[in-house]
Length: 71
Image (cartoon, rainbow, N blue to C red; front, side):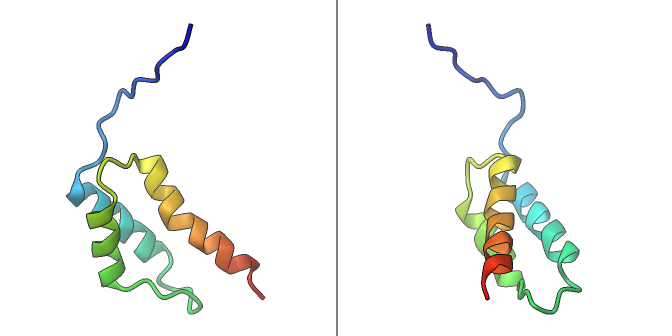
């Protein structure tokens, strides 16, 4: 018998996704090796509909991990 996962939380709306992307933008503002322009905040917020906060974190953090591994 398969179980189905049911989320107790709604996915964040566009404004909440933008605020979360801004949170990461602010968190990384002192890192001179990372460019995180306002246009990226808008792009993330606009293109991640139906993403949970966990998926948003993946979208925002995985590139940082990849960047850290590059020579």
